[in-house]
Image (cartoon, rainbow, N blue to C red; front, side, top):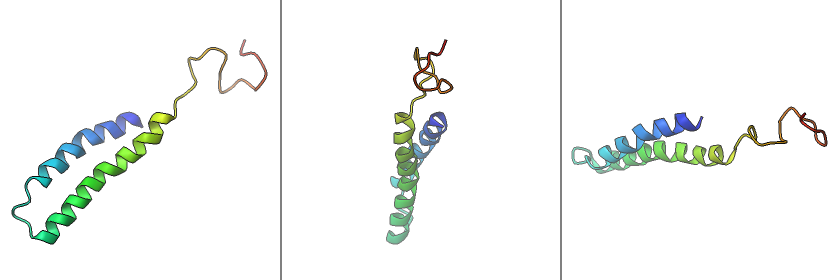
Amino acid sequence: MIGSLLGYLAFALPHAIFHATHLEHFQTGDAIAQTILLFGAVLIPLLLLIPALRIRPTAGKPGKSPDTPAGSSPL
């Protein structure tokens, strides 16, 4: 999931910046709406990335396994 969010952000952020700097052909309301929506499309994956980075699997840590019942040894 993290890779997908980062991959999307690698596209969405430069895309939003490009369009935010090329607004001269839009009416004011259209320019505001486009900018809000494009940066919203950047903000949502950023907000989803925060909990995704906090959730770390415990695999690889000695003595901990999701299949091991509490209080028993993994071996």
